[in-house]
Image 1 (cartoon, rainbow, N blue to C red):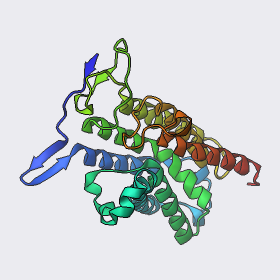
Image 2 (cartoon, helix red, strand yellow; image 1 turned 90 degrees about the vertical axis):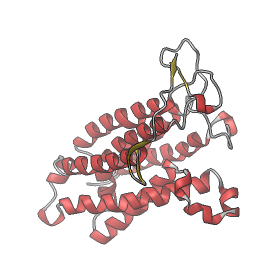
Image 3 (cartoon, rainbow, N blue to C red; image 1 turned 180 degrees about the horizontal axis):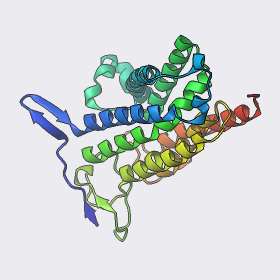
Image 4 (cartoon, rainbow, N blue to C red; image 1 turned 60 degrees about the horizontal axis):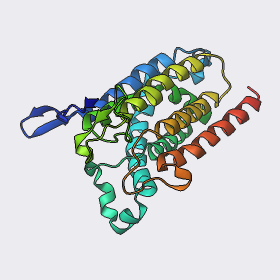
Length: 269
């Protein structure tokens, strides 16, 4: 079995300034979004738009900026609300202590949805068009985030058989038993696999909303599976039906995606 390689979380130290690997993965995520967003403008769904409705590079930059705000604000508030509501109600000022850790993907998703609504309203664009534009550009950012989780040695997996070739010991987990490197599983599933499938799906002729719906179903399903290998939060453990909080949050996500896809498929245009 493998031993987790102790990686210095600081990538570059410039005097008192420390640049962390985790911060660099966020920068990589934003850079990939910008790159893919510009490529997305070349897909048939956007090339065929009339000139007055065409997207520009500035549109991609603006939706990225709003999305970053949505991820940070929504991710933090989601973590406080979904995972530790009692604690943060008693210590409201600590909600702003983002440097202590604690971000929720599902909260970040809600934040991005609000950002997309704002963008769509301010630019007078159909909201589903904005959602379909953003969806295929997201998974590579999720993959970058999971790399950051692995470098930080956080969000490790559940105990695994020592016979598993890639089982890994995370000494700082408080146990020397081998575990699933669930950060890598999520990197491969929610990151790379979802990107390949969604990018391919988005290139074809789709009705407005179907690409966004595919993202909801795809991410929710793959995250649900990955959670079976990820150690539940120690302050929550497993909840009803032996499912983790992450799995319970994925259930409405998948159902919403199915409902959106069926609704979109029945719409005209």
